[in-house]
Length: 222
Image (cartoon, rainbow, N blue to C red; front, top):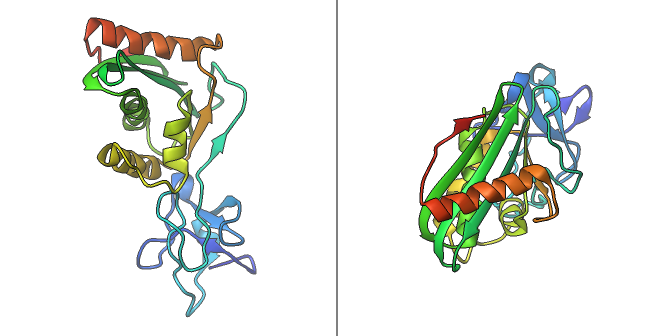
């Protein structure tokens, strides 16, 4: 498409119409696989005869010379409070035996308040618990608002942001990728486990509690 005289890649639906996310802004890139920016939908003009390239979202593979797009991932200091309208989340999984009794813990904090989840999953693996913890956050967080998810599971981050074929937990990962893509502005941030990061330790505590008590608390406002 054309943006103020420049030709850009714009995220579109299958018919070629721009897909507007929060506040009517469309994801654009000045070159295939380049850094993502956002532009107002009204400032984009169709270019007659332009080819609709393959989607370059994470997990969709490379085609038509387009680099695989990686959604935002980061390594940055942990935070304990959101900024503005964003939502921050911490999540963790626990398993006794791997496989064995598994559970997850998650925390959501926004300007609307704080809520926590401790959920028993039954028999599973640590990876299943970690992935499901991220899923619960995506299911609960309001779509369209910037969401920062802090997790110590590098496996989960890589499965969501790299074009890896899942050898195990394929159905769970496919469902999680759809949620991740649909939510919008999501940033996955890796934190080191058991390093005294208060909210990460709390998420771990909630996960362990779920395994020990075999109880699902549901989301509880704090």
